[in-house]
Length: 354
Image 1 (cartoon, rainbow, N blue to C red):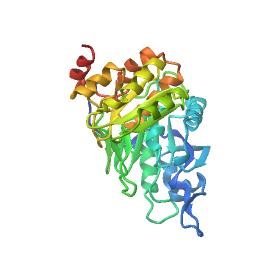
Image 2 (cartoon, rainbow, N blue to C red; image 1 turned 90 degrees about the horizontal axis):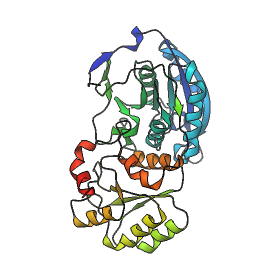
Image 3 (tube, rainbow, N blue to C red; image 1 turned 120 degrees about the vertical axis):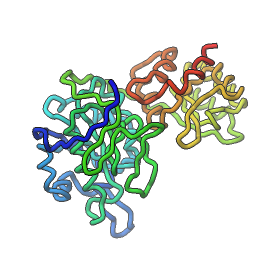
């Protein structure tokens, strides 16, 4: 579908039915008077006190999922959210998930894969400042996320600050800025100012049924390369039940030759090894150096311009479906929903095929 740029005022459409799935996070926290730290406290009723006029945007219901600091989120929570959307799918025009910012991009990426054939908007938002604080950014984020939920589009998105971001491209880039999220290695899907401007490839709403594929394998480990890392440690992880490895290599994803025995053990045990770069905003392009080509020969999977949040949840999701080892590489590198741009990587893919 060709790219389009439009300004949409959701108030001009009929009032939609939106379900808020409450998952906790900073937006619902309060300061502990003894420790000074933020504690999980409030419920979703706080949103209607924060901005009573949200009922003018849509007919709103709330379903409680959990009330946690998102640093404690695990794949089972992604499954709970996905199951709730599946159960309520036919009753609502869109879904708004209030979520902590620390792992919001992981949840957004996970849902992007599990909610197959999604024909409605699923939007995640939260806050950097609790809703009970007068300077909170939660009000604007909540209102803007609801507005996006009413639009004629489908997919998983993060709405935060002035940005609309594809779920599988979302990344938290600041612990304190109110525009805390960015689109990783791509342009923002849209922008919110006086109106709503959509710049990405818009998939309209689709009346078809949702297909929930909701299993994730937690036995995935991420390792950051540092000089001197011992291959024996990685071999122990493989021998002790790791089902998938993500290695954050140097430069374009290069791994030291000293680790090649660990790569060979992973290949022998049919444990997929995904390789990415440590460079912020960088892309994995193995083959620039000889060590990269040697790693490819030992079966590693480069994931080009995918984010850590996306590649990790995609690998857990593929393993959760029982995808055979021989198909993992093809599926990881296949662009399912805009999460990877193979146009930038074709020359390096061609090297893999030599």
